[in-house]
Image: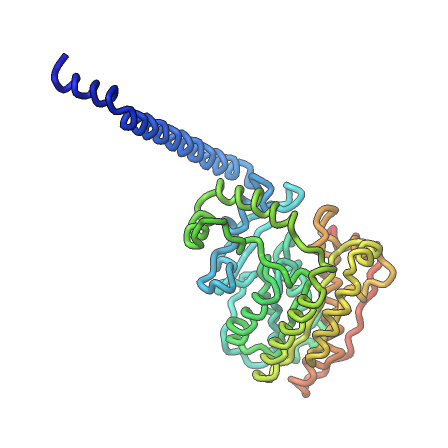
Length: 392
């Protein structure tokens, strides 16, 4: 035995601590390498599966991988969280796992392919609609969401007297605070004649894609969300499930603190309206479920609370739910499992309600007194009409 081998044997036998550290280091290294290989194989498998199926790989928002990996990007504004990617033409598979829908955005990240100049073209009446996934048109083909339908309705009413523009600032997941930031930092840049704020009862909540990961810096979360399918699935399936289980029911959200928060948000909107001499319509959009469920969940009372908070701040307000007389709004839901997003019939209903509200509050007439606008009355929606619309 050489002197060097003898010395090594002596160190291992005579110094058990060094031997344990060496073994521990080897075991930790092997374990980390194994975990790394498993993650790499999982990431590769998920990407191949997603590409092959062109669909969601882990039940995340019914989209390719995650919403942030498909058509949202993190915003430079940390309070805004995320924005639509600009210049996008992305196919997405929605809840039934079959409907391939092409999503387009313009150069500024607004849904639709049309670009808008900050200066309005002559003879144009411009409306900006701020909202979340309902306004965005979740599950709907291009042009079949309520901002686009409203534009067609209004253009039909005014004829060639004036050109109607309706800009869609809807971004999935946005809450009330994000809508106000969008109004202040983006919408005003385009100098609209009017703004519609699409409001929902969950606007007090926190968007799922802003949920942080414990012990992980925001910069790391941002990077992993944009580059890892495994991380996106973990974050959506595990963390978001935990948040959902610990979510506060709407009835409790709108107690004293929620009521005060709602009043404060509408106060900010009203302040923007006054300072910019801008007419703003608040449209309260429904949860598309049965009348009995809306009553049981306290949603009808919450809508009344929101409407009062808006009107008390001097804002013109319309509650879409109140137009569904004696019918279950479930009929207008995107599908049986998604009661938060409307189908084509629901989008058409919203557009007609907004057209009537804009006429009633004389939005176009006050801005363009020389333009003749007849009073718009909402058309009736029979089940037969809805079936025809939904099959279009």
